[in-house]
Image (cartoon, rainbow, N blue to C red):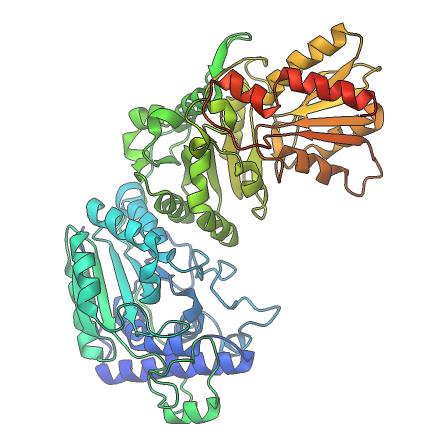
Length: 620
C-alpha cells in the first residue's frame, strides 16, 4: 500500500520545544501524584515528539475511527509521556493531566482503555509488541486499510521471550505496516540492562528475524526524523528504530543516573526550570486516510452441526465443526491456532476460511496477544490450544482482562481423560486459572450438541470466555437445538426422594449418570446436575439442591483447587444452605494409562462416585 505522511513539516526548533514540553509535563504530573516513572518518559520524549507532530495519523476527536494509526506504549510505565502527548494533541486538558494516578482519574499509573485513545492495557512488559503484531495482521489481512502500528518498547523488556515471538512472527509475515521504536536508555529498574547501549547486539538479532533495523540518536531530532522516514518507506518487512537515549534526559540531577526508576524527580520545580519552564503548545495531529472503507467478509445464516442422541462425539470435534458453521454465518469471526489445529479441530475453520485463520505456531503468548489486537478493531477472535498450554500465556490473559478485551479461548485435551500422553499434556489447573480472571466465563460441555450451542453463544459474550473440550468421544445426551444459557445448568436426574446431589461437568457428567443409575437400582435415589457453566455457576440450582437433598458431591477431572468443587462452595457461601459437601478430584500426579484406567485411578469414575455417595448417606 502507498503510504504518505504529513506534508506540512513542523520545524526542528518547534519539535525540540515540543519534546521539552513532553518532558516538563511528565515531570509535573508525576510530581503532583507523588509517584510515577518520569525518567523513563523523559528518555523517549524526542522520539514521541517527532512521531506526534510528523508521522502519526490520528483523529483525536474520533478515537474509534477505523482509519486511525495505532500507538501502543509497550513500556507502559512511561505513561506520563503518553498523557503529555494527549495533552499536546488537545485530547485532554492540563487540569486532567495533573489528576494522574488519582482515585477518580482516567490517567492510571499504566495506560488502560479507560481512556478512549488507549487500545490495550500495558505495563506487564513484553506484551505491547506482540499485540502490535496482532493489530498489524488485522490491518493487512482483515481490515485491509493503510493505517500503521507504532509500538514504543523499552530496552529492558527485550529480555522477555514474548518479544522475540513477536519479532519472528512479524518478520515472517512481512508486516510493513508495523514499526517498533526501542528506547535504549540502558538503565532498567535495578541497574543497567543486559546490553546497555550496545545497539549492535539488538540489531543483529532483529535483522536475523527479518526486520529492517534503523539506528538513530534518540535525542537528535533530525536523526530521529530520518529514522521515521526510512521506517515509513520500508516495504515487505517491518521496521525497528533503535534509539540510543538517556534516562532522565535534560535534567542533570537524574540524567543517566541509576536508582531513579519509578520515582518522581527530587526537585520538580528546579527540573522544570532547567527544561525551560512550562509550555502550552498544541499539536495538530495529521488526519488519517479515509479513502478506503474497511474490508468485510460475507455472512449467512447460522446452521450449527447436529448430533444424534446416543452417538459418541468428541467435544473438541463439535467445537471445530461449530466454529466452521459460525464462520459461515459471521464474517467477523477469526480463528487463531498454536500449531495444534488437527487436535483442537480448528482445522475445519482453516479449511473453510483460510483468509480468516491465523497460524501462530508454538507461540501461545503471541497467539493470545494477536487475538487481543484483533478484537481492538471489532473482530471476534477464537483461539485454541491444549488446555495445559494456556498456562504459558496466562499473564497475557490476565492483562487482556485489564484491557477489557473480549476473547473466546478453547482448551482441548483436558484432564486425565486424555489417557496415555501423561501429565505434561493434561490440563488439570485450567478451570482454576480461568475462573480467577476478572469478569471471565468458564464453560465445560459434556456432549456435541451442548458444545455447538455454547460455541455460538460465546460469539456475543463480553470479556474472557473459556471453553474446555475433551479429547475422546462422549455420548450425546441432549437433543439438537436445545438452549444452554451461560450461567445455567441442567438437572439430569431428580426425584422428591433424592438423598445426594452429584454435580459434574464435561466427562464426569457421564460418570455421574452411570453412578446414579447404579445407586437408584440399589434404592438410593440421587440427583445429577450438569454444571456446564462453571463460571458463573448456577448458584440457584446449587442452593436448591443443597436444601432439598442435604448432601452435595462434586466430581471433576481437575485438581481439587479452584475448579468445579470450589465454584459450588462459592455458590453456597453466605447462603445459609449448609449441606454436607464432598469433592472428588484428581489428587495424585497421574502417569500414562488408558482413559478409563486414568479416571478409575484418579477416583473420579462411576465406581468412585457411587462409593462416595454411599459414604455421604452413611455419614462417613
